[in-house]
Length: 220
Image (tube, rainbow, N blue to C red; front, side):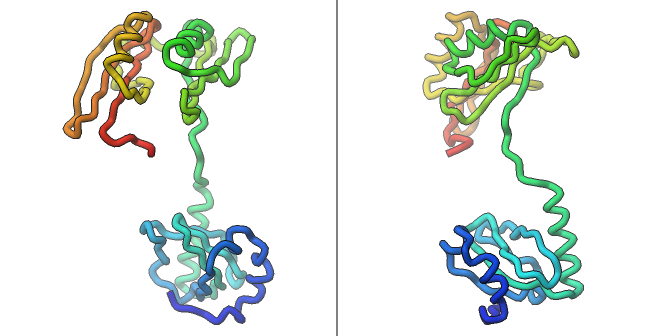
């Protein structure tokens, strides 16, 4: 990245000097009209920013890299600005929950709490009997309800490849035995080339449940 004397960006220093993000890092001062192609982060992902031509900005990537600079008007600047606007239109979102329309949400919630280690984090007493259930790790939430506005899917007739709820299981054989004793039914089992095991069951309402013991967890 071509460096620019910090004195040329005093306005940027003044505007962002108190930022916690900026205060914790060594800033690089960059004249963006000289950058072509777009600057990559350490992970190879392009940096994102919101910018107006001639306005000092802070450019933050997915790594710890931070750059500050002024975008001058140029062909590159126009193209860069268009790509930034496209990024702004697609915000980064976090999954909150996945919902299922079921026949008996109250009974199903009680079964999931007792046998799958989930907990009710929110519920309603209206006719739809909404229950939000969080997993034991507190990283995932499912919502179950009975809403007459749409038919309840025939989960028992549904191929598990179309829909299933998967749980990480350190002891999939023990979990399978316990769930079958509690009313679940066994469907099939697969072992992947890396040694991961995937066991498919159905809960008492026919909803497919998968027990996963992966060689490498999906999330660390």
